Length: 630
Image (tube, rainbow, N blue to C red; front, side, top):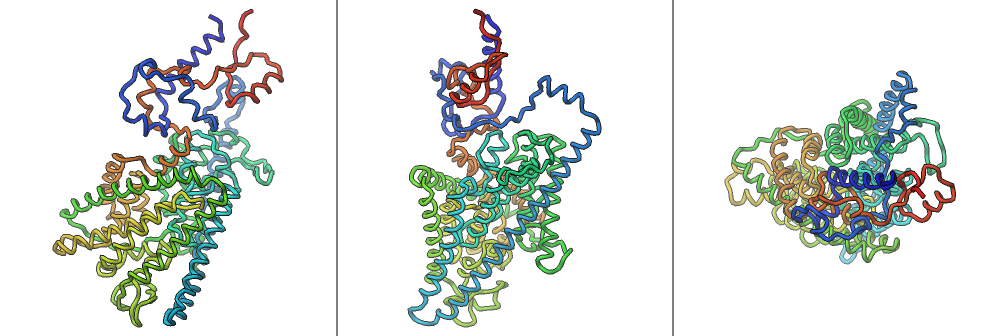
């Protein structure tokens, strides 16, 4: 047997071993998850190339260090000072990543607040002017819908015509990048700019989206750019951090950037590290943990300090994250409420599975019928119009009015209520989602009636389901938290109607638990989500109930489908590797999944053949072998 033949056989055996030990391709899980154990290829009658054809459009990143002779010689020649300098450079990059992520987060937050404040104050003035005049109520309504459609159209135009990879939260594509899949333009500066500007107008445009998810993608882009010390967009090489211009070094910094994004969004540095570990990174080590935690802490501190300057009291570090759930008092709950909370976890898992199922169907529809850029912009504008119409109709036709001063509502809005009263539905729909969440978390039990919550919850649920996946930058956390808080309070009101007061200690607890249950049922995160919510609420009292409901929600949701991020990865047919290999790969060799015959290179090769190989093949890896004997 020639050396080349032996090498190919060794490659087959090695690839088979890798298939058994490395992670499973996630988009097979739906069709192969229930497959019985398979020992040979013959039993399944798998045709060569059948498994590989879906991967042809993607390339792998080189996360393995090439330990060849050149690498070993260079490593031996390096001095201890060189290793110290490299180690210090890693910490400096993480410091810059944390600071820059905070700067971008503050920019996004301030722009959203200012733009939303201008929009709602302008509309509020028109409502006050024309609400009492018969037949003129359409004037503020038309202005409202025109503002929202214009803002969303601008965001969708940027994404659809500028950089489509900037759509959505960006978490699925970052997860693929960290897994080793090369997604074009995913960490480009252009993507960051469109992501930041787009999410500002998407949130201010009234869509059921949040700014927190895109911050994770933004942090990852910043980490990738800073660590390389050059810009492809501006074609500028700053001659910095040249030792980090490899895929495996870039991967570690992107993990830190994603964690810094979580930390900036929620004020949760520990949650950011756990998110990067649980949901993002596929490669991890102890030293990386410390550097990522350092970037997360710097991100939270920098954002806190910058926001204190913006609010006029520099140095008062009371703004740890972009989203502020307010100050929670120590809410006591009884052991008798634990079964109710567990039941909420079950309902949260069912609702999350339903959310994912509907969104999956909508995503498949988009992939089939909404392919061109103008159709994507049109869909986003239609979603904005329907969202505004639904909000206006709920306020106009199904509102409940309450006397001013009865409940601790901040900035009550009158709308169509009498003088001295305020609109409950308007309090939920005519403001930024973060303010609505804070209202649901902190108001008294009698603030929101069963009717208002029963109408708001299904409408916002459907709007959030439809919006996620549209071609605008959109976060998933805030819509899920708002939806979950609404149905959590609805459940508490229902219980208090039929049970004594001592069984329902506080509706605010049920709002927080409902938010955790629904969010856990959608994204299927456990440890990191619990810590993120605990750090965001800044109250450890909620730790136990949130742990319980998130675990139950995940278990129940997993009975029906995957988490939403994994669903979108599977639908995009990205060959991401899961944590465990599927049973059907047992007994497979490389030849069973090869798409085409192996193209080899000789030890000495002419340039023309190398160019010809690169032009005629769809892959970039070639075994180097001795020439066959004549």
